[in-house]
Structures are given as C-alpha cells and as structure tokens.
Amino acid sequence: MGFLSNLFGGNKEDKALREALARIHRILDDEKFQMELVHPEMKAMLESAPAYDKDPNGTGPFGFIETNPIPVNGPIGQLAYLSRLETQSGQRILFHRLGAIGTVDVFEAVSFNGAEWFILFVDLYHPRRSRLTPDGFRFTKDVAQFSGFHKFCENFPYDFVEKKASERESGLSMAYIAISKVSDQIQNRAFNRPLAHKAKLDLVKSRLSSFQSQ
Image 1 (tube, rainbow, N blue to C red):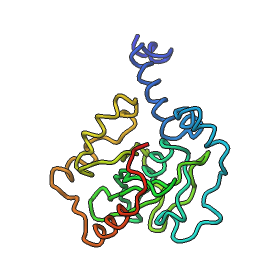
Image 2 (image 1 turned 180 degrees about the vertical axis):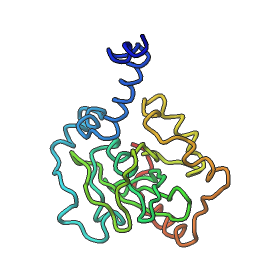
Image 3 (image 1 turned 90 degrees about the vertical axis):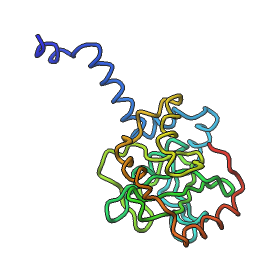
C-alpha cells in the first residue's frame, strides 16, 4: 500500500510538503513570481524599467560603488541575488541592508567563515536581476536559500536567528538557510569587523540618505 500510495501521489502531508517546497523554489528562483510578491504600483515601476546586467552608464567597480550598482528585481530580487554570491574560495555571504544613497540600496556583507567583509550597492528598480557578479565573487552552485535581509540588523550578523524568525509573518522564513550553516560561527563569535572595514562602514553610513528597510 505504501508503494501504491507514493506511486499515485502520496498522502495529504506529502502533497502539502511538495507544494511548500515548490513555493520555496519559486521564491528563490522564479523572477516573475518574485515580481508578483511586490506591491502592484512597485511592480509596474519595475516592469517599465530597463533590463540589463550592468548599467551601460555606470562608473566605478561594479557592485562596490553607488554609481555602478547591481540591478535586481525588487526586494525579493535583492535577497535572491545576494544569496547566490560566494567568494572565489567558496564562501557564501550573510548580509543586511544599511540604508540607501538616493535610490541605491547599500548592504553590508560578511563571508560565512567571518574572514571577509564587504559593502555592496544594489539597484532594485529593474524587471530582472543581473547575471554578472562583482569582482572576487561567483554564483554558488548550492541551492541559494536566503542568507540575509533587506532590513537593518542592529547586531549583524549575530542576530541572524532572531531576524530569520521574524520572517515567519512574511512567509519567507522557510526560504532561508538552516541555522546550522552559521550557528557554530555565531556561538564562537567569529564575526569581527576589521579596522579597514569599520572605517569604510562609517564613511558609507555618513552618506546614507535613508535608513528605512524596504
């Protein structure tokens, strides 16, 4: 009976799990579905914007300066893109939104092992996300579950568990990485900002025009 049950679709619990996993996959990968999750007015704005991998008029290092930000498709597109990044040594990143400079969102990021820190600039007003990566990064081959937030984290990244739990109301919690991916690093206090990064962070914070989360 067990075999026949699975062969012909499984029980209700199996079906519910498959549906939940399919929804998570769409949240992570389906750009059109990601667009459906934003406010209709914002969706119309994104759809009317140009679609490109890199601003043809951008200046400076791609992704590392507000004059050449990474184009993505809305707030969920931000999460999907940044969660796909990994360093050349294979380290994925945790991230949070510091605020914005004009219409460009500014994110602080750190590698899972705590060794490398970054400031990344992202333009969310586009119909799709870029297929390019900033220098020093590549796209992970892992399932790119979300590993950061489009809101400010006061105690980044040590408040990751708390912030992930807060996404239950939005329905995104299941799309996040397992806590076990970073629990040891958090417990061992592996995340310490280098002095050079702190200086860059202070400079960027002084230039922010908005601190509100999307």
